[in-house]
Length: 374
Image 1 (tube, rainbow, N blue to C red):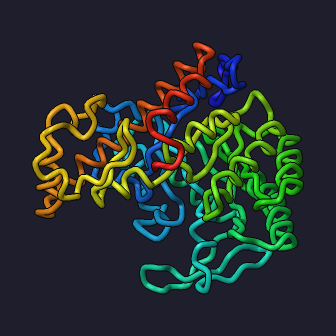
Image 2: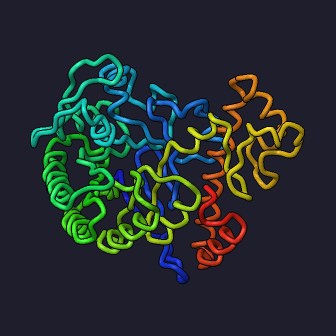
């Protein structure tokens, strides 16, 4: 009988050491490296589940904090869990709510027991702890759950980062004890802010625990990209080779490439759909703001190398018109395009790893796009 969760390391790129893997879950197989579209409130904004499936999405992310506030985990459980509630039959990952709670700043009170906070919706007093986060995620029924952790800000004093890292380790132990369902995988989250010794210590201590996978949190929170890359270079070599590594909240094309080059397998980010709703799209020539007047008479597709629905059927001029007229279809088309662009980029990255040519691929990508054009 096969395990409900199993990670196969299929190939390591001879050029770079980047990894090509396959993660088995109760709701299907995930080919890695992979980008996960974000459906914070059980929906990827402006995109339907069948559109996600058609564009090649393998797994999506939803958020414990937001679903706890509305509609509530009990209602989702009554519906049969997230998969049935949102009509998505592929894998789902739920974030623990930790990042959202710690982003509330003045609206929260942190103790060893957990975090007391006020809802950003109605100001009501709420409480999240390792135990309640796991209880909520078990009711939501995602394939992959994330531990409740403490995320440090940028910049952060050493002692503060050290305290948050050690609390994250203690909270991981409580999360593991609170888990009762065997059909959900619990990932730990490596913290340590921007201090190499703390990152290494956290990764080493987590690697001693037989977890199904490991998140890398507390990055892409305002620090320069080279600092994030330095932290990945400290963390990834310390994590088990036979488990997936998930860089949380990162999703620009350059960061996807750089993360994979350093040994990351999974990514997520809201950026693709967020900037799409403002009329900004990713293309093979870099970022393009289709709202701009320069595209009013441009009848080319958003990207003539893209195979998404928007690029196969509509022009820049038409999409700009929709955006300027505040028609919903405009932001939907930009969202469809950006998501497909990132999913196709990951397909190309997986092929380059298999062909032992990822460094060549990266150099070719940057020669055309530049490194800071996102």
